[in-house]
View 1: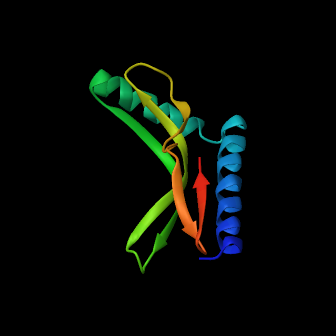
View 2: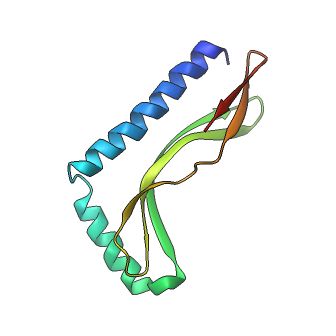
Length: 103
């Protein structure tokens, strides 16, 4: 992968993150949030659930993938479902011999 290819995928990840947040603010996930709250209340504090939209890059050559963004909704117990960044660990990825750090 070259730096231009990587930058295009990184831009897609930013767009997905922002679009998910925009849709959430507009109430697009109210039905899903209500169902999550019902299920979480039933499961008590023992379990948490999440629903997410991910952008991953898979390398056939290295047979592994990295997640660039994982944005979604999460809840447990009686709490309201909330927007969550479900995979916010930093990654380092080599692109044309340069190390690119993702947050």
